[in-house]
Image (cartoon, rainbow, N blue to C red):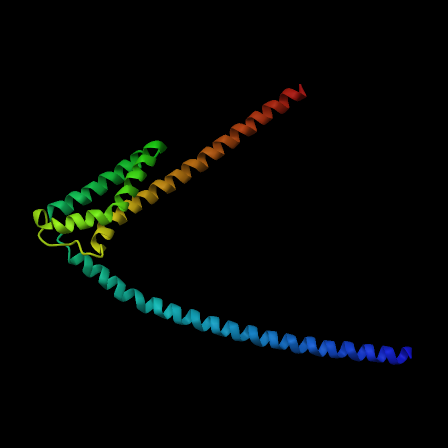
Length: 186
């Protein structure tokens, strides 16, 4: 009886092993299919990226060529951004001032739609052509983007300042702990 039982147990183990091997083969086949599909998607995506940037760059270049950069208000706007960038760089040690500066920049971005509609109604008084379309492309590129870039510079500067302060604080804490341990030893 025990011999028959051992034989059936070994047959069951063999069948389980065959089932496991079959399941493993199915799993390998499914994984290979998935890898092939993923690699095909990556190839299609990279081909679209390679072909897709050309028209976008052409549109971007044609956008900038369509602007009359000699208009006084555009020169003043560019000068304003240059001065704002210089102020941002020079005030990098004054975190409170930079916080106010970033709030003003975010306010400018927030008000961009209202500025666009106001300037779209009154463009004849200061410009030779109407740049202010209802979708706000011009105001986004020439008003909001530089303000957001300046805000990103402020955020990066703030992160560097915070890292520097954390290192400084940790050094002071280690010095304090060393003094306390020396005082206990004496």
